[in-house]
Length: 306
Image (cartoon, rainbow, N blue to C red; front, side, top):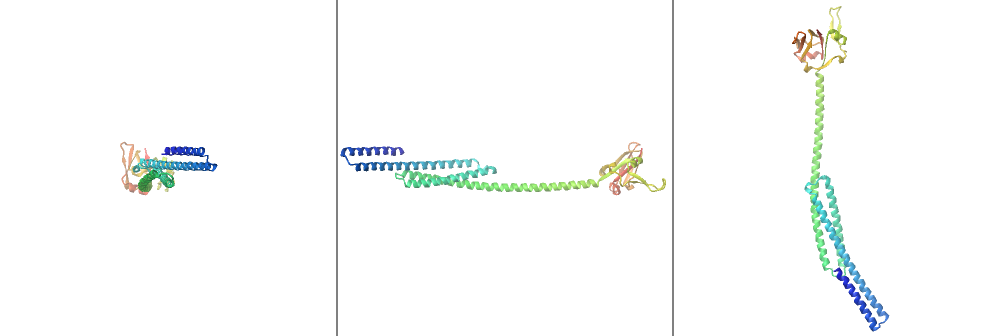
């Protein structure tokens, strides 16, 4: 169609000039008639040029709208390719950005179609075909807007689902943190109770001849006259490092290499007994009532003879 208008322009100009020159040579008209003829020819050329310019503008705008609609469809397909059912929170922002770009394209296309409609209305050539194409473009754009509206609803629903899952995960993490803290507190409490229980069951043992025990500063003789009436006591200020730390729950049977032994620390006589060992130089201290045995003192000092 564009090529046809250009050919018509060339023919009209050629005919006009031919007629003009024929009239001039045949009838020898005056200069004013020549000027009028030239003006008419120029006016006709301007009208044809404007018509051609309007035609080109309409074609360009239609092509622009078609390209924009094509780009909208491509971006819609890109959004669908993300698979909304399996979309991750990290890629959700990308989907929203794509939708915003589609919205911008729709706005631009709508503005271009409006300008195109005004251009077609004001065109000075047959616009029937163009009006039909504009109507089809409007219909295509409306269809795309419907599709986009559905996409937005689907994305909003997915966004709400992801937000709900995120809140649930946060709640689980918070609950797990509370449980971890409670477990830690219980472990600390158990550890404290264990330490306290171990401390309650801690005792101090020293074994040796009386001379060895005295030299180590663990026992002393008190009172009496000469060798009469004297008592042997465990020194209260004895260096604890001279004792062996033991667990009273584990020393109910204490073998001692000795021909004889006696307890210098105070313990109820009914709470223990000394029995022979497997050999003559072995004795065994058997604690028969641990609660009573350790009630008076947590220090066990044994004097032995070998």
